[in-house]
Amino acid sequence: MPLRLSERTLGQAQPGTACPGYVRAACRVGWVHFGPGAFHRAHQAYYADRLLEHDPRWAISAVALHSADVRAALAPQDYLYSLAELGPGAPVRIIGALREILAATREPGAVFARLESPDTRLITLTVTEKGYCLDADGGLDMAHPDVQHDLSVPDHPRSVIGFLAEGLRRRHASGQAPCAVVSCDNLAENGPTLRAAVSAFAAQRSGELARWIEREVAFPRTMVDSITPATDAALRERVAQSIGLMDAWPVQREMFTQWVIEDVPQVRVADWASVGVQLTNDVGVYERAKLRLLNAAHSTLAYVGLLRGHTTVAEAMSDAPLARLVEHLMRADIAPSLTGGAVIDIDAYIEATLGRFRNRSVRHQLAQIAWDGSKKLPVRLLPTLAEALAAGRPLERLAVPVAAWIRFIVARARAGGELTDPLAEQLLALGRECTGDPRGDVARFLALQAVFSAQLAAAPACVRAVSEAYRALGAAGAIAPRLCAAG
Ligand code: CS2
Image (cartoon, rainbow, N blue to C red; front, top):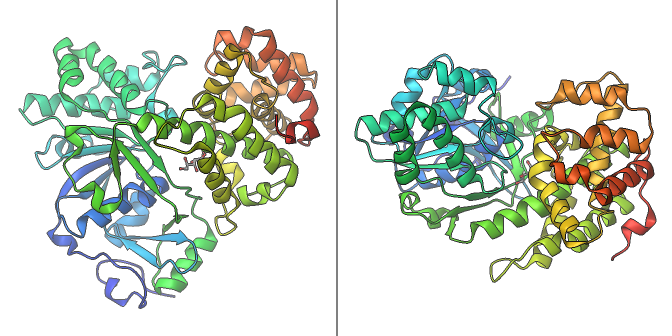
């Protein structure tokens, strides 16, 4: 049995392991992050690790909002963990950027102390779409139980919105400079959306606080990208072999990684360029291309791929009709809704994205992407569908992922299976009511106001396209040949 990874054993890591290139004890916490899941640890913490090589101010205090699992796994390792990049010749890298993981609901005082500290220059979040407590229109859902709770007990919040509003209030009250708050989730207009949610919450407590937040706190837009399959037994084994130490919770990602942040003064606190992070005023272009092309294609592969019996993205991409459907969806149906301007060559972006999906060394489970469809589709796919409808463009291919999502839920409901989704119970109940009649089944789902706008749900062309796609897919995910041809 190999020794467990920790500060004490780090020196015994196998030669070839990339260890932190700095003295951890000499680093200070300057960055607070909410949601230390695999994506954060493979992406933002990797950039922090590289910043720390020449600037000791960027150790991270991570805040776990719901589960204490990650803290239980990493505390005995002094918060060290391994990052495996999935590509030829990449060494396993030990990341030393995490200083601590705080369990938010058990020790809110410690979280507020970090948020208030003058050393804290940056706050980031990866709490997934559902963590923002938004309603169907993208504003803060005042009726959300966590929002209600946090308004009544502001010192012991449950939601990230409650933590941010109270943390910023304390920062303001103690005369600290405001700092940048960066949403690193796949939301359209993530910065402005977060700003609106935090200000709306703060306004319930004090108009002055809300105005200070609006005026002084920067919520830059950002685009984050790196495909990060969940940790599995094969990864644990591979890491143990490679570093010669046992790591309870390593993470993995593809070699490709990108982070683009809106260039506002409060973000210019670190030498981002030195670690490959881009600061630009064109984040919107990157964000739309990524959400609408990569993320929408992912969801299509997930729902159609699962119906067709596939397990991973690369496997689904080796199914020729499905791969062609996805490629034409991106080129013929989604690309017309995008302008890359001088920033992105959309054709090249599609080509590169398809190449990333085909990468067989990335075992990305379709089931992982299929989670939280009720929150993901409204961000990554439905705006494109609504624009195509308004512009009179064809809807038949854009309707396929929506229909496949419904088929996926119906299949889960019939099998008595579970669903990972904030609306799981409601969706499974709808699924159980479905009879197989396309019109009736689709109408039940389109009536979900938390997912579909009234306009989409009522548009005859949309109802027709989704019902037809639902019929054609059948239970096994059949793909009509005409959908695999350009045009
Ligand atoms: C995926 C994303 O799980 C999903 O919904 O589409 O996590 C995707 O892998 C990342 O956004 C890539 O950067």
